[in-house]
Figure 1 (cartoon, rainbow, N blue to C red):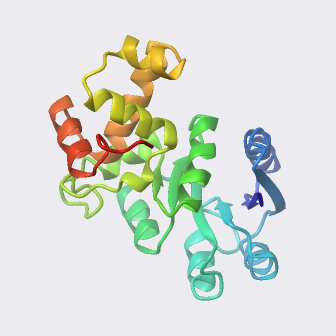
Figure 2 (figure 1 turned 90 degrees about the horizontal axis):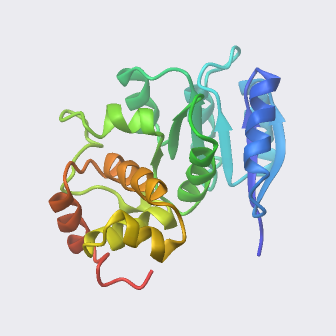
Figure 3 (figure 1 turned 90 degrees about the vertical axis):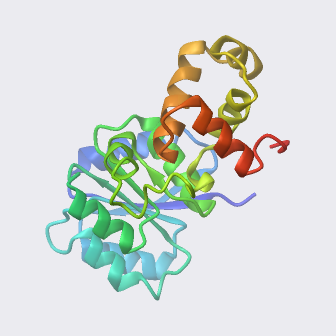
Length: 218
């Protein structure tokens, strides 16, 4: 099985080191290059065609959105994930409209970086928890429509929790099925509900039914 190839772009070495440490915990991920400039990112992506580019929004020489626009037609198979401290609505929406597959803040949990790569490569879109709170609950956002949320943004574990929750299992029962703690189950369920823009268990059940989750063996 071929590994998922990743390029890191940030002008702070300590940030790239942290990203590398988190991602290299996953055996199917491989960091193939890193750079501290937007121009360098463009050159690397054109030359190596990675599966995923993780990039800070505010690179000094050329910001992430300019990099994305430059590569839009020449790197159609590369997924772009923004990793930034900037969380204002205008910036987030501009990034999403330009086609990024993920947007996370630099204080996110390492597990979100890992999940973002997996979801983006699978064709989904991943919001970090802080970003989801802005985008998915904004009634004026095209990304917040809870009547048609994207199940592709969920990780495998979140889908498992969704299915078991919709079947009426308690946190303790779900924890037993998945061999994790009830508190971890609660964290997963809260996260998936934020991603999908759901606000109650009844909405969760309707979503699961509408999307065939309850009848799925996955």
